[in-house]
Length: 177
Image (cartoon, rainbow, N blue to C red; front, side, top):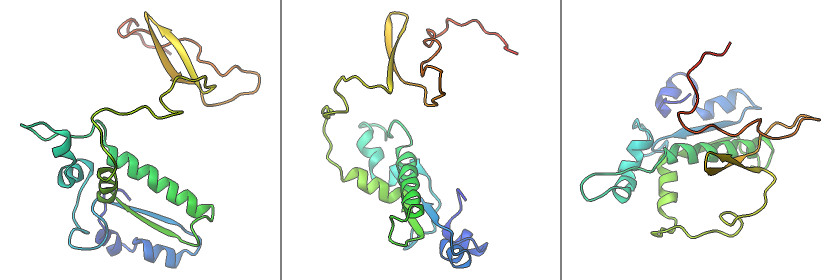
């Protein structure tokens, strides 16, 4: 249901409250740009607009132009939060809740409320080098590249990449059949 405003969904009988009323076992995750209530609840929007309106574009920009986060961070973060909330409801950890409502604007507010430093500080257990069975170091030319080990585990087959990635531009164009 991406891209629909709350009243657009309601006019088609697909609003979260109506859905859970008609389908007793259903859980619903609702995501909007600005939230579902108040004067902005019906505004259309997407990540870049919310970054601009929330002030992220000013913070990330320079003196002459607005900037942006290096990824659609509000989309990604809110999507992960939505998935986590839905899984919690399905697992019964959400105290009987069947609807979760998230907005890009709220995620922006949370991100803006976090401490900011000019340089990121290493975090224990995250940025320190360590042996990790889920990471693989491969040589690519003169460089070393750290990758995540292949995810699927097949009994009797080693969990390793068959070869390292090739250096940029080193593969001849070809069509494999």
